[in-house]
Image (tube, rainbow, N blue to C red; front, side, top):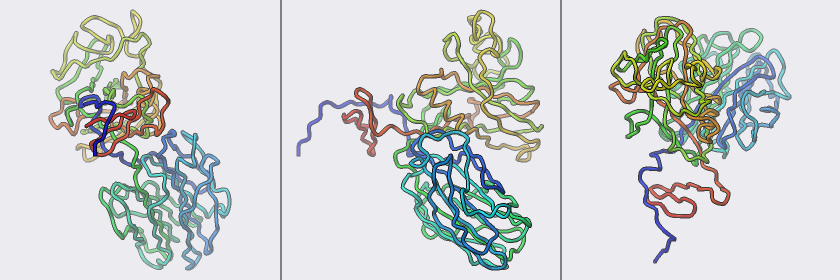
Length: 463
């Protein structure tokens, strides 16, 4: 059969190497009340909020849940009727429910909860399929044990969410991998703990048992576990110097008025100075909708407790991107520093006298580092959440110039790997998950990917 096309475009360098998007954890919160707050990110088309409820009661309470006043869907509920009872349920709201709701919103139990003996745990994610849960399992039979478990099927790269509640004091722990505990608190009168965990499976799991262990023997317990598939339409892009052929990042540590200091392969979070990081992300299509973003730094030798704040760099005079001075260590008159955006030409950051402080935004967030973290050895520190995703969206849209971010510590003393570190996978990394709109206005390109074929505005592209 002969097939005709208008024309064929061969392209190898404008379209980035990408993969199916991953599911990312955004936020979690808990409360021994009927309303808590949660960061649900910005509207992306692939968000998911899960809401678990635990009540020390021996009957079903038939609650209802809303996120920002949007009704959520119940997955399952049940009760362990032994003793005073252990009731538990799980709800979810996805982007189809959430609509334009974004940022920090209220998660509310609107009916059925019995007040002080009721607890709530909410978690939010991006990159999740909007087709509802893939599977769920429960355990409402545990009496005088230390573990509770349930078995489910989970697709490759799928999300698993689990909740556990018991009728005694203590804590939960030792969750089945890849579950990571998000919240564990004594919500119920008398101190009975309620905990929630989540994680992403890297391969398909069939009838896998997910288990969690109590620190003391409980007289009754309940657990619920459920899975979701990842969003098949989302795309992941990773920007890390030297990985998969990428070249386009910068970083530096500003030490003093005129110096741009950077030891080979080292960055510093210390002395209240600014670290600058940037990534060229021009391969992301301008019509992309950013689902999530994550900055990963590999730090080590943390000697002090410190809070590290971060924000972005403005460009009031349209002077364009800055560049670091290379990996040769302490130097003058090269690249950017505190005083100049370009020391070789004596170009200020803004105006005729503006230093770096004149182009720093207000803080968008923070992360904490503790003294002796990981035994003074290496650890990965991530920055994520809706503020970063919104910033990357602004860079892609062109509403903010992409001059990167700043990080400033509060009297800390921690070292980290720079873009020049020998192990490329330990260099500063920006990972972005995005989708392309399924419909486009006239003249706007639309990208559809089918294996090695890419359809751009109705034209076949061989990739």
